[in-house]
Length: 236
Image (cartoon, rainbow, N blue to C red; front, side):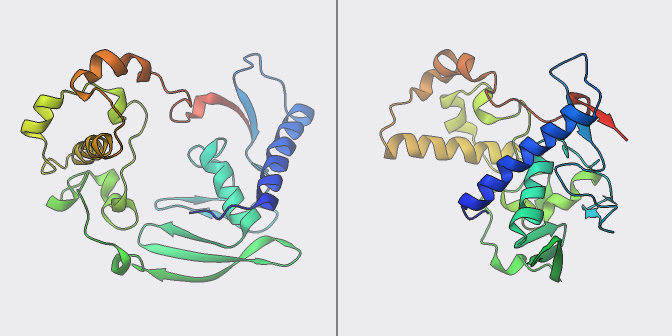
């Protein structure tokens, strides 16, 4: 959750420009212009090695900008939150780290950390996902069963509800949040909300003919999809 700031937005734009200027000046040009070149040490403007620092995730840590989508939105937003705002809480599995800025110093200071802090603030869930209610999530998704990760559903890639077929009659007959495999129950919640909003706000969506009227226009995302490692060329 981010508080709007004209200063941070200006610094964010400057960071993106500086990154591209650095790449144009020091990194080899790629034959495929759709690929970006990205410096794994400097990343978006912070050298973990020089600052004797590291990034930390649920399963890994490192001092290079080599985590998933570091070259894309995830890396940029991490840089903005931790190194521009410098006043941020970061959830890592069961742990919450609280960071604050130090005047005149790029590297923020970890003020405190706490375990399972968010559980007492979480209301009753509308639905479960990844079989968390059954205690049997896939091994690589076990971390999604605790707050804040079980409080929201990430419809990744092409698995977004609005990009797939929908039958209103069948939905009304069989919609249930009991099937918590992957995001199936969350998908039901999404369409329930759409149906309610359509009626409340008089949006006049023709949900009975969703596939015929809307699906073809939503098949492709105007913002693209998941960042992939092969989206860019990397330097050591």
